[in-house]
Length: 186
Image 1 (spheres, rainbow, N blue to C red):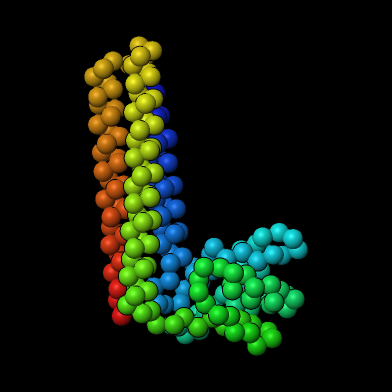
Image 2 (tube, rainbow, N blue to C red; image 1 turned 60 degrees about the horizontal axis):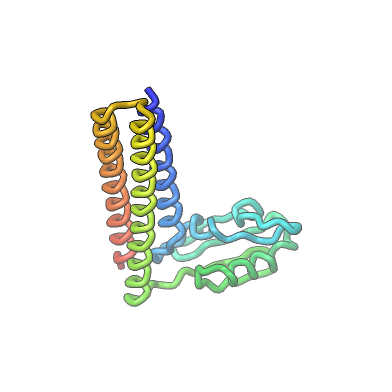
């Protein structure tokens, strides 16, 4: 029974790794305006770093424009500063009540950089998955040493972990290919 618990807890870790990768991918701009581009941007709201989505309405009125309307007018300047400091590379355009972000067409050079970034993030996710596998296998070895399980049970458990890893690595590859395709689309 303990083997199943270890497998379940490690599968949860693998799911969290995938969720994290999807969040990372959604924050990469692929030439289209999406509110998720601002997910990582935080604004100083009464001394507390707060996500933009919690202090303003974010909408996409056009395919290449994001409109940010803060709940409080006093936040307009803070929002502009936060966007300038972020790694988005976008210049906020304020009209006194809202901020407009124009998403420029990606150059081929920038697309290549983004693809490299996608590959790097995918590789980091695979490394995280391998670390989860290593942790699970170490637990199984400890249980065998403590004579809680047999050598055959360890082999079967390691095979089960490997099957899970293969499934999630395939999922990482699929997500990576999908994001690369989106980025390279003109």
